Image 1 (cartoon, rainbow, N blue to C red):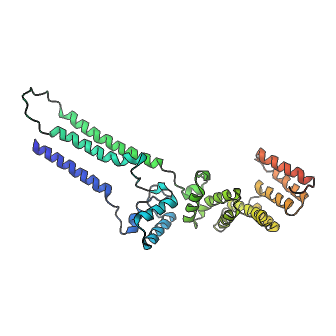
Image 2 (cartoon, rainbow, N blue to C red):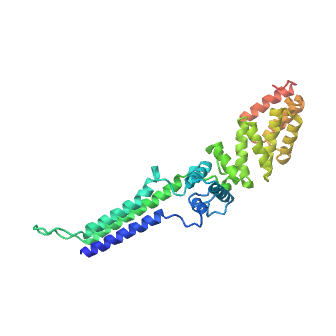
Image 3 (tube, one colour):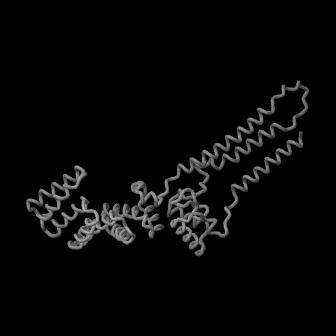
Length: 332
């Protein structure tokens, strides 16, 4: 009996050793860059590391890893830079804290519980003068041990799945191109980092345009201007180009007082999207306030009101300007 107990204990210890080796062994890689890259998830892929992904973003991140290695940074410093630039959800192995603590504790707890159940089954007993107890079926004890191991495995799998669900969705280029991401859900800094890592990819234009419009609406023309220019330089779709031309036209007028250039840029946008109500309205404002021609401006404002789908607030503002311009009043 004792030899059987020793055998089972040995098997349990070997299983624990194998589990520890599997959990702690570094990923197979030929060099340090591959080892670092295998720990970081590609932000535009589905569960791939930047070391394994062929995506342009992953290649750019690996280039950064190799550059930082050549500069003498430590592994932790390089990984920290990647995470700070692209978001904390990129770490493939979640830290052992908060909602992920059970991911790390469940396997050793399940293994320890199983070993204890097996040990109790085969441990030697001291002689006793009391009547021997009724012997219970060993099948029940084995069932309990198996159940403990199964529950531990289920907890591990569930925790892994939950940790994946709890991660913020990556700002993938496919989602950007399809208009599936909400700019309000991310900060300017995060958008800047993702854009910088994908600056040559035409699919990044959607995010760049969203960020430029955010700067435009905040009155930060300096930051908005460069992004609109880069959108135009990066193979934009007609609607993207029209958006950029329109806002560049307003900024050169409102910021620098360049009336003719402003009108030319807005007209280029209208050539791409003729029924752009916002572009027409800005053109009317430049004609009225820049050229000092209220009557021509009133014609432009009238054309704005023919665009379907205007909101009531927009329509009210345009009608107010139309009334003042048609009466020959100066631009307020």
